[in-house]
Length: 294
Image 1: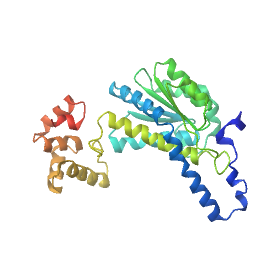
Image 2: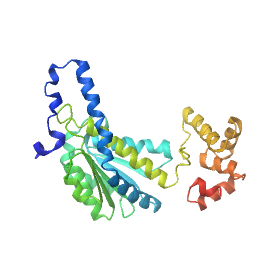
Image 3: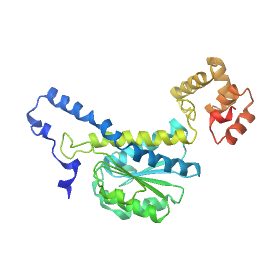
Image 4: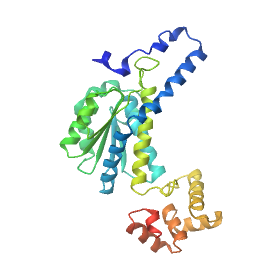
């Protein structure tokens, strides 16, 4: 029942919210938001378990597929979309949301109640044994997510769940269940607040750590960044400079020769080789720059 969920309980600090001054409320809200990172810390072993599953599957050609409804679904789609320019992913990270793409910008609240809708969406993606389906639901009981995780298991995929309540229903269908308890929201039941922040932070951890695990990072540099606009072109040059000690001019010249592939440019400079050899080294090293320059 909803009344038993932490995400639905009333926060005793804000029961007189409508009588507070703006400053008073903002202070309390800031204090409550400060609890999110500490709550996530308690879940780190479960997050690590999820990341290890994902890395294994990505190395075998699989995908991360986030799924959720409402805020949870939007956060999953957001993380998936941002992986493309940051890590050079094509379809390795995807997000689906109850109600379809239109639900990202306009609420389609009834869609979250359909288990069948989730199964239909996952069938379109032809999921299989090397994919990891990450179900996201603050309440931990959303039928859309449960249906998706149930189908994912039948299809042989690995499953991860992210919820903001303990003993969440969706945890029953996950190989790695992440349950973060941030306490009641300052606005009762508004899980776009602390729960949303927690989900975003966990998704940041999952995608970033997974991309590190498959060689898309050298040091702390995003060496698979795609130079798709002016800002990212300049970032690509700076990354090459930071990784190699090259001058601006050398970084730019090498990137042109490397067809603006940052990893290849770095290997060309550090290994003192031409484009074709750099590409071969990276292929042999499964994309890990540190291995490619040995």
